Image (cartoon, rainbow, N blue to C red; front, side, top):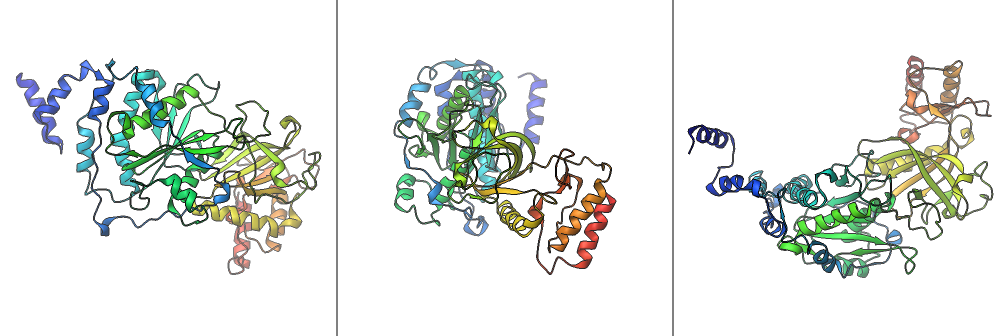
Length: 505
């Protein structure tokens, strides 16, 4: 062996916690030759990682709300494996230079700790033994320019906060101008014992039991799929995986939800979790952004993002300029999502400009509104959603003058998100005051205090200005999600301090 190479390998080996074996060196030497997809999938078979001892495991339970009224008909995706076989058939024995099996994947997972202990360890394991080889598989079939990327959720790519999101840098041949996405929910195998369980049967049989962990997990994933208009989602504990698919056609105009058979960690080749993940990823890239609004009345273009309120939706006040909205059930309204105003870094809160219109009418004849969307699976966001509605009710005499008018609220049709529809009051102030606006904002805040409410988040971003507003007050105080009417907090010192903060802006 060349002494320079020998020294290099020795240096690498001494720095690495994993000893280099002759098999690893051999695999590196032949990496440039590539391998067939069949050989790659066989080498990527996952071994079950031991669990941490009971005292070291997270005690976190599925705390998300589950409302069976919002989950559509749930059935088995019966031809799932047949579809996988058909898709991968032409590629199995083809050699790809881009397929390089890394022997370190599994060893790193084994040596990274004492076993599965919490959701973060499940996520780390998925990244190492599923996501990385999945990217190789996608790039081998569709080329490196497809640029698949597994990422944490953010408001830039998703509404809500699923554990992982798969996006593509290159868009497939689906709807023009829309990006393909796949949402993935990961749970610990002790919080959600999926292995060997028929979850379709468990949900169908115990659908009214809101404590049912299978109902909770499926409803949460369905909520993320529904609000983001996505067709596919994945639920996994690594030990056991399911793929969900939304179906909406002439036979099921209201939509149904299908679940793949179990994909077990011990599954090999085309029955492995890697094959299932790669198949669905290639599928969404091919289909592109799949518009699934689940609205049988919809005739708008496929790329239009339309949401509607669910069974608990309420219209709070008439909507000026919207013809025929008086006395309507709130479920008759449709909201088109237009420009994003802001979103929290976690994706748990999302604010957008939109248009509200009555079903079976032209969205272009609707009324501009601001739509706030809260991820009800996030306890903080769920609390903010409820509190904001309470604050608007308490400040109802000030709506339309000092605070925005609240038009409607309720959960979305998927049941996973809280929706608040507000008057569009113009743009937020950008770190400066327009003439006379400071005094108007002070008057508005004083009136809010007089109604027994402390805002608790007075910033320029929560003060809007619309010079074209016909009201005497072109200023509105917005962002009531952190406000409180607790008399122990709404003290003279607290309100005075808030006025001082406003004066210093």
